[in-house]
Length: 267
Image (cartoon, rainbow, N blue to C red):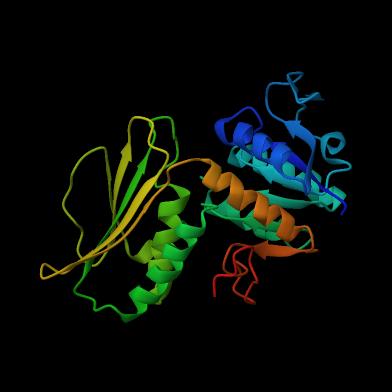
């Protein structure tokens, strides 16, 4: 069986290092190249490069856990070379997300705010629950990460919020409530409120809380190891290698044009 050649972008970061280790352990994958801001560092006899046409020339799939600016640079090169891309980077603006959609008309892009199967199952459940639940429930999303995480709400929290909004047949911005960072706060009524913590070394803890004073419904997820996200990203890379173009996540195309047989098939 021919191995799928993988490029890791953001290779010197936490996720980049874990992805490299997991690629090297996978008999179906081959580490082709690695990129980062710092260059010339040797990883498994491969020199770290900057994002470029040369770095991506003969790879099959690019896996990107870098930053939004770098991600768009990667997509520009990938689009020219017709390469598939898996994006685990978060913190994109609406304008940047629209640019990603434009790139997906030419190449296959798999993008998720969280590569965990459990997180994507909770997103799916939240969408269904929000269709059925009464309007008298206040909704809060707890979003807990380590102190070095810059963006907030996290990509995971935004995945949940958009699923809730979709379930209510509303736009997220119309029901976006207050953000409380490292502190307690009072709910805005009939809004999605965010309680955000950026402390310590927490990998990721998330909770969706529906509360109507008579009962509380909670959907919880705790990430124990970052290998969880690497596993999801590599499954996505193997899956998207067979696609030509389009924007995908673990459940369907993000443009909602067709259902997706995802790496985990959530349907």
